[in-house]
Amino acid sequence: MAELDHVALLRVAIAESEKAKQAGVHPFASILVGPDGAVLMTQHNAFMPDHDMTGHAERVLMTRASTSLPMELLRECTIYTSAEPCAMCAGAIYWTGLKRVVYGMSEHQLKEITGNHPENPTLDLPCRVVFAAGQRQVDVIGPMLEDEAAVVHQGVWG
Image (cartoon, helix red, strand yellow):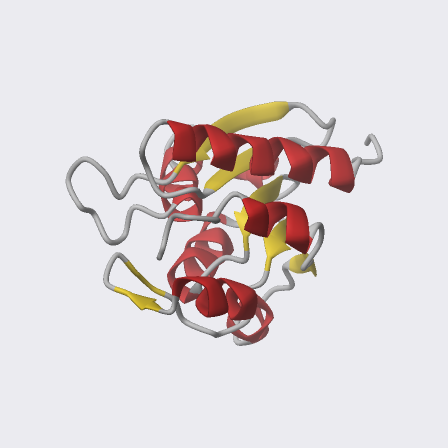
């Protein structure tokens, strides 16, 4: 199994969040990475066009992954995400069976940036708390590159 370059792969997710912003959607993105370091799937936030409040990048990516990839592979995968998974997304990651989460900006910092925006009423609940309630371990690395991840949100939630 290859040693994953967490910084480089998280920067891919952050760059995807910028692409999401440029496409006119909420600036969040996630990538699913296999044990060999290959990017298996990419997902931008899916709030638009239907105003799907559950269309978070992580949750949509986990739906796609769990319905198309074998569980044996998913158990060795890592999700890299521009912001810390919320409680809903952490649950989706847990149920999908992933090994690891690497995230950029914390939920706490995101809440400070978004406030109580009606399109993103951020929960300040660490994903580690959600995973700790589970029956198996999910490794968590983050926050990491938090300032880089936060830059993408400038001018979005004001």
